[in-house]
Image (tube, rainbow over all chains, first blue to last red; front, side, top):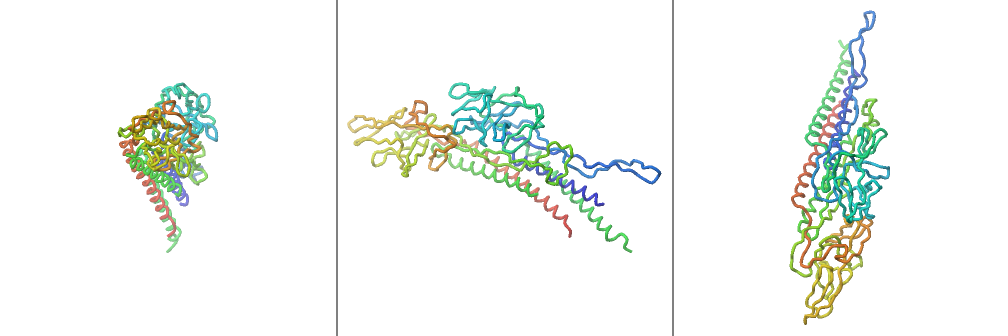
Length: 246
Length: 258
């Protein structure tokens, strides 16, 4: 009976993690290049049940002791591209990430909201410099970006944007600030199949209708698990107080 | 449960900032040489689920959940506005890059693209607030008119038709004009983020000066209206996540001993 209480509680915890991930997707609807997360579930502590008493144990079946979070998976489907008409905005149509230099090392982003810092370098809104093939890109003012990634300023090509693609994007980790960092087995390589669009910005790939539906399902599942817990509680109460009473 | 509420709150704050920025852009649709701003959103740090008593599959490679969103920067769009004819010789528009400089009575130099200038009692060129244009330009005595050429040369015209050069307007450019600090009154101050001003004569690297024209606000009204709708709806969605967290919390409270 106590086991049932913990099974129901595990269900509540797991739904809470799911609501957290969904709330974060909804909160980042306006974050350019944001990639939505999804939670996968798995069963927890599977037990084999046996029947005893007739000489030797006979298998009855399997029994799960509740649900657990399997993984938080990032969905790398591209988001819609929106025309902003601002020359500082660059969107990637196709594969790859912009490579930026952060204080913690190289990081990758699909957010092409760029500006120019006081020293003339191309930076992201967080102030990280955007990397080209020859390091940070210095434009010193207005710039143009060709579909192939060549950055021109003052009438001449300054550098080419370094776009990085990954053989295993699942190994990318979010660190906040709209960037991903690559773990050991991500398999970075120069991106090939892309076209850059200046004056466009990639939106988040979170879809409000889907996130809201999932949010509804998650809160109801949470309620269901809570009711289940209460039912176990009532049964336990009856067991303790009423069994054996004459 | 606190983290769920925190995510919703962060999203409400961010959308509220977006509303404020959008409202300010719309309010300045008729402000001379106004530059619209756009907020930039980013996601916040990610937390491991493991230390938070959430059951995890042992094989879980990554189980991190985000904590919301924030506006990291509100970036000014330095695209020039349309030039509108006014016919007044002292209305100056910059066609291209650059800012005019003015000196405040306190001696500080501020920058503006609002070229609606006037003459004060001493014949000096000043802006609407009475700040002298830098470098100072004054018409000599007896001047009855003036002419400003695209290269910034100011010529005073005397009553007898004789002309006299009164000075030349200068323009100032910055590596990152979006980093200038807005001071209100269409004025900006140089900051570490904008870089130091570079003095350039009009037509020699910076823009040209058009006398008889003013630069309009670059607010795109249709775009701002769409941003307003988006901000409102995203605000609503964030409020829903708070409501969901609240319902869950109420459900959990029901579980306690009665």
